[in-house]
Length: 438
Image (cartoon, rainbow, N blue to C red; front, side, top):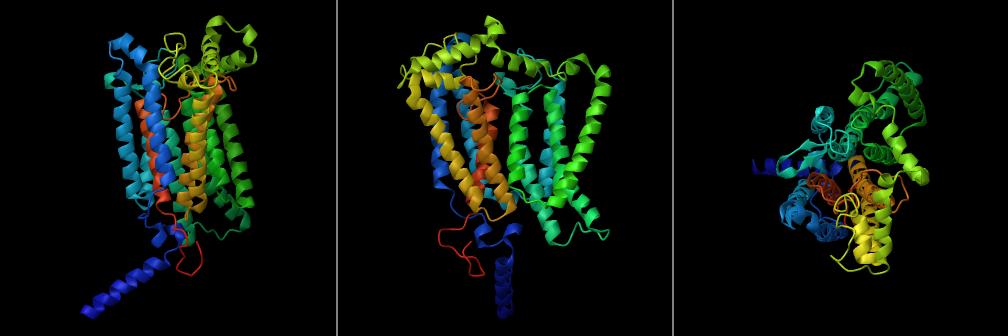
């Protein structure tokens, strides 16, 4: 009996060693390794640095609204601590626990439902319907969830698709053309249809900066996915036909849509932003106020800044200085040196994240690592580009710095996905069961 139990145990060990990398198995895929130290360090630096700068940018506003200069930083600190706990929990659970198609389908369904429900909330003070109002004066934006959910759902979908194909699924005997169209539907048409659904709902809010980020993430996901040429052409053909039909259907339904939604489908909201950017001489003083004050704040910082906490633009001169334009406060108080430090921290995060993606041993890890690192850094650099007048003005936050508890919570959850992938990487000098270097 004892000998039989020993043989079963040895058989299980040998079976685990034979599991292919793409299935999430193998000793280097168990998710029990060490998290990337560089990612951990830069994450804690960004969160700590962000809290310091948020306090400096929001203390006067907090005192004006509630006579408590720490009101904003306390709420942000609570969400940052919660986000770090979520990130570490995700990292310790590992990507094998997340590799469940049912869980990804649930995340997609919940995100879609929230994107629909937010359209029926009251219009905000700046126009649009983007927030669910929460207690303590907080707001929840479903679009922030959508950014992370898109990466997760696509990564799990590609992992599930590859497993099914490895097991011999999704094969047709009707010829190469039929197989190409079937693969095109699975590889391209279904992901694009899901993305188009979310983008259509987000346009109705409207939130065009989120649309830009989702399209950028879609490009990254496409570049990290291997699709046969025949399947790619078939998928693009089907997507083009479906997109054209959808466009004609929307144009036909435009007269019967509620006025609150129809007014955004002419994209006048985005065209006004482009007009301000390209023809500032034709814009009104109110339309140029935020941009002019942002440039003035950054320019007055010089090389080393006027000093931490000593900036003047945050005292009612620069709107949204604690949120979308917090980079301008950094430039004013810490100067060129502080601004470059922020850019280099995000650049380091991107480099480490892409390194983790390049060493990932499964499609799931590759998509999660590449998507999350690009998401955070893309949004950060878009925020800086808006603050420095390199891009048209739009509402986009600076990750880990701008005020927004739920936004930073989702960014930290995304970092948890990246850290989870880093735990699956082979150690230096490790070898695969076949004797080859990973």
